[in-house]
Image 1 (cartoon, rainbow over the protein chains, first blue to last red):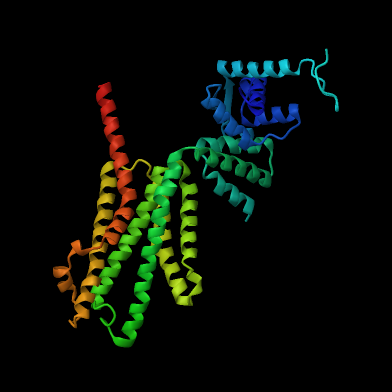
Image 2: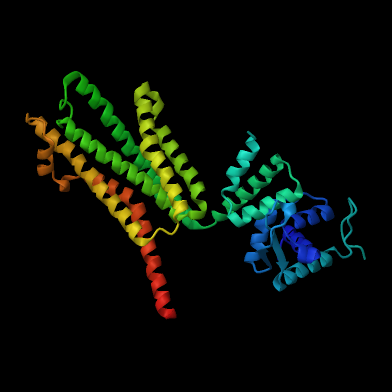
Length: 109
Length: 284
């Protein structure tokens, strides 16, 4: 099963659609989760996901707002969708009925 | 001069060109400060380097090649340094041929062969390490220097007078570090050195190794002659009479170990070439 950060990247990539690339994914993750996302962590995780066959990356066209530099575009593949769905289902299933109040444990009936 | 920018540029050199472009574009778009850029780059470079060390061959290169080669290079360099200073002092006080039984021409020729051999071995070791583990070249380079510093430190170089301490260090710098650094740099520039070029390099390494070994035997021959009360042996006498086969096991082993890295790389390259030819034949 994939990890939490891998799931966040897959989810952000799917949300961004055709505009998914390094900086956009960082902004998407930071704005939705309010957590810092480092470029180093992102790029090494992208490599790992690509090696697992879950995403595809390629170099896009250079744009002026990036100082004429190219983007590393990202697209989620079927295997990535499958892995993200499995992770989401696992989190939803294990969270169902779980009490998150401090000092209280167990499952609400 | 902005130090952050310099550091950033130095770090970015270890990234692939395409990745460097994408990452720097992201930095511009995210409007990061120089400090944040360096912090992000350090994170990326460290992660990349650690990821590359998952392959066992890099550990093999470091432990089986770099460690013994560093220890031997340092030993050979120390011997070289120990040979120069006492000889010069002896010459100043007693004239040539007092100490070793060698004439000055024979001594300096032998010295030159050993310097050339040491520089060649350092260069080829750096080159071989860079070629064996191209993606971890600089990591291994740091390991190479660390090994070397540990070995030098263990010899208590600084507990002796000024010239004894600094002469070996100077020789290390000139004949070991500098050629090894050039070898590593060359390996990053010519990843696809052709087989004949590699073969020439291996032949040169074996030849200078043999010459260094041969001239080391001169010293023993001259000492034997001198201890029997004979005159200092001239260069032509040494060339005619010195027997390479008298070289001790230790000297032969040293030469073999120092020549091994480039021969290993040559063998790997030959094997890869044979595999490619076999594939071409299969496709054909």
